[in-house]
Image (cartoon, rainbow, N blue to C red; front, top):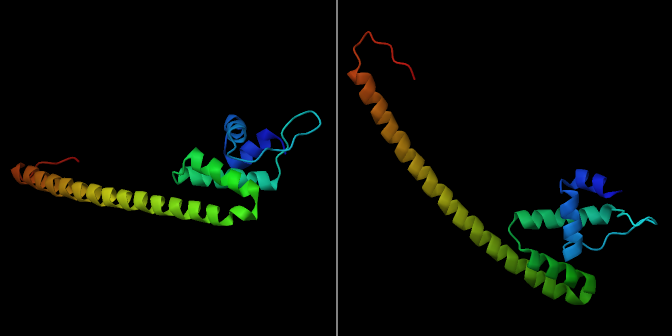
Length: 135
């Protein structure tokens, strides 16, 4: 499939696909006789993997190193495994930090909710009984 179709399927722009290939984030894509990229299912899998890992915060350097090791074959299984384990630890640390931040934000919002409720009650209590209050 051509780059436009691969872009549509993967949700990655053609420019980004070219860039990923250029820097070694995805393996070199086969070319047609005319020199156009011809993406296959394996290429789409690499794109999806790279996209997913980038979303998780893995650096381009880590991913290109992983691809380099992958291309070297089974002799690098342990190295790839160690690399992925290290990245999992780092990702879990980021998730834990984000969870702490979320909890803190939730507490702050609860505090504001409490304060706003008190203000609303105070406003209601100050209004004459036959007044209409709009919120």
